[in-house]
Length: 135
Image 1 (spheres, one colour):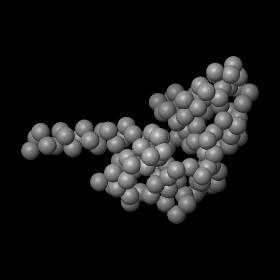
Image 2 (cartoon, rainbow, N blue to C red):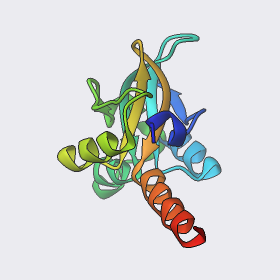
Image 3 (spheres, rainbow, N blue to C red):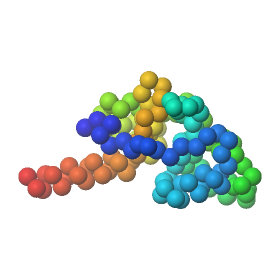
Image 4 (tube, helix red, strand yellow):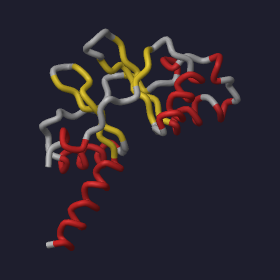
């Protein structure tokens, strides 16, 4: 199976001038555990990522008001570990394990086209096990 078969798109993105508070509101509304920070118009280029874990570590644990801090101040900056849409899901899992990450932006020709997560990969395993039971 290919990454393109499991990746999510559209994904949650914010510009670098977004406050952490606004990003949190978006993440809650969309039920997402991360947000990619992008620049650019139609072809968005990833410049960073922020996860809920990062928000707790860099904002809440330090007692900072999320309304007073910009997303670029706490993001993990690019270059991020990424994968192409035609890569195998096995390769995606290997990359996630090697880098101890749970989210992998999918990039093609330098532009963001989706994201694949560890949950997506687990869902794939669960689906294949279900197919085997039905066979």
